[in-house]
Image (cartoon, rainbow, N blue to C red; front, side, top):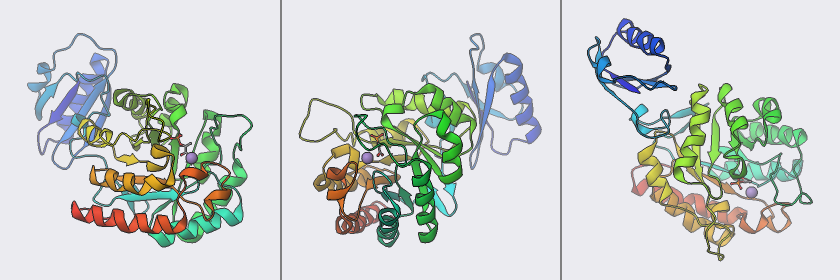
Length: 337
Ligand code: PEP
Ligand code: MN
């Protein structure tokens, strides 16, 4: 259930509504917008009349939430969520670029990557230290050593860090080294992992599963939000279709659909979305034009020698060019990049 408070409702009025909701068995989540406070009541409460709340002091309106996801719904935060980490804002006017290699491979490689990323004007460096590989014989990542190298390179170049967490035992380690926890496509429905991340207060990027619907993606976000971690971003990274000329089919339409359905920032990953470096720039432009709040792209100083995902990884000069082009697209729609 959703209760929208009137503009200027007092703390006492808000508290009275929260108390009543709790009494009825709801868990209450509070969203403070520019004008209105919205109270989201979640829980297995079946018998209630939203209109009963409309007679309470300070209440503007009250509704039953019909979508299966509640806190992820745009209704809960009509103005949109802006996640602020340091001086970087996700979900604001600026389109944030997160870039770096698929995997952290060593000190020299990640240092070079950080230089490319920072000089290109991106704000966040990516790099997996725990890699979900389709084959158990492929490179599995450097683990904690990789995370340490990634953090050091990021700090030298004034960048934030995003890195993947594959299971809940890795959360404490990632909390130490990374500014954003990445939940990979293969883990989008690892509900135990999502619940544990919901208990942290670290921003998280949840990637769309390879065969997941938009509603399933939003329900995965709901797992994190319902734990009280409201700093969730969603990522379109391509889905599996019958098409074989690209690694995945980049669902650009998911971007405006998500922007309508949810208040959470939406990120696009054209690297995994296409699987081929020559298509990444076009899809990055399309994603920004479609309203993405950020990009996640793979870049490496020598993609041919990358230990994972080399075929979809941009060369440094392609990355520079992508930044120039996405900046122009952002400006055309009243944003910056
Ligand atoms: C990655 O970002 O390198 C990755 C493994 O992505 P995904 O989970 O989308 O396949
Ligand atoms: Mn990758």
